[in-house]
Image (cartoon, rainbow over all chains, first blue to last red; front, side, top):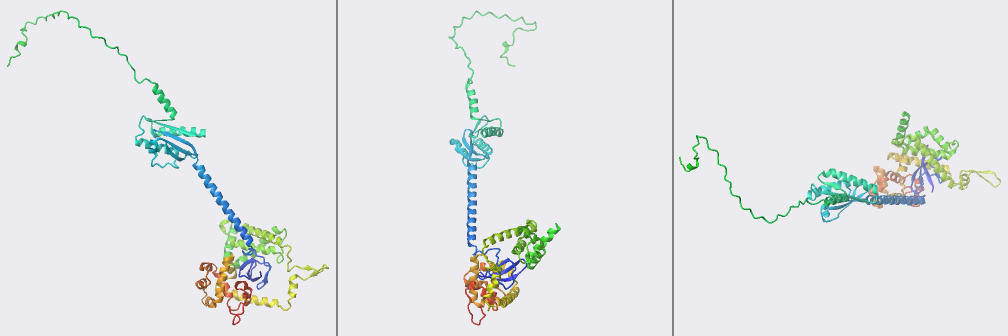
Length: 252
Length: 251
């Protein structure tokens, strides 16, 4: 390729090649009007470096693919990490529900464990909410539905392979829910509630007082002769002694 | 801080004016030489070492690329110079076996002979290279003056020239069409406006592509007006081999 030098400045020259490309190149001692073949092109034209461009293009494509793969792995890994439950909170009011909680203490699943439980969670959106919030809201719903009243009990158990986490969240939920529902409702682990109920069952239902059965009625003894009552003391002198009875029919 | 602001202001001015950029290069020549010397391991010799020309070009590139918000100018310029010189050395290493036209050669007896370029020139005694170059220089000066009336410089044309082959081919199609329809070139000369719509429609190319390379197209179409035979002859790859036109000089 031959280049015609169009302009020469101190730092660069402008050249025109036979294909009509006009380029700035380092001025390595060129003069205007010169026709040269040994021009040093700081930026290699695209067609002269088609291999380099192709290589650059394929490496760029590889970079994009690698970035996309990384992004996919991050998204899938993140979703898996989020979605995997760390444990399950079993809440028995008596509507029973199972709340699946992930490692961020967020709810990722909610199922009813009996028909009342299914009714309790109907139209309720729990996904992504804090486990504590869901437990509170479900208890409130049960109260509103009349399934829970003062004197009732809520059994709360957490099942998980991660024992320290299980113990910590179970204790926290029981404590917080007890505060939330007030003193009238008992919140405890199911085993504790059953123990309390068993202890209550062992108590006698009522104190039985033995009353002796009455025998046949004895014949009444003959009445003793009536002893005349002592006569009253004589009335004072101004008393007529007749009383008023003899004048009861007297009509004024 | 004041010095830094001063340089930043000068660089900003140089980004808008090629001559100011050249002045800045001239003023910072000691810095450029020092950076080149660091790379070469010795002081560069002006007019002899290509590295100095490469370093000045890199300094000019740094001027154009500089953004004051991203730090000081001189460290950027030093990095540009170093990168360009590394690039230059790598490319030169590939061509170590190529004989320079200007290098002096030796004959079988070890006697020094004339440079290859002079030997080759001597093989065409009828060619008066000096005259041709003078005529070419004259044409280029005329073209520069004509472009000036359109507010375009050679530097602008270089900056506006398509870099991709595909885009360059689109522009070539437009140029070929204009060459076959001289009235379009005449219209450009007369009105000073590029007939983009007619070119795009006639050549069957995207108008947007032509718009993006307007200054380049203006320069190329002006070359195809009267009076630039030598430059036009050089551009045979654009429109094919040069052909004789009726009237001698018409495009």
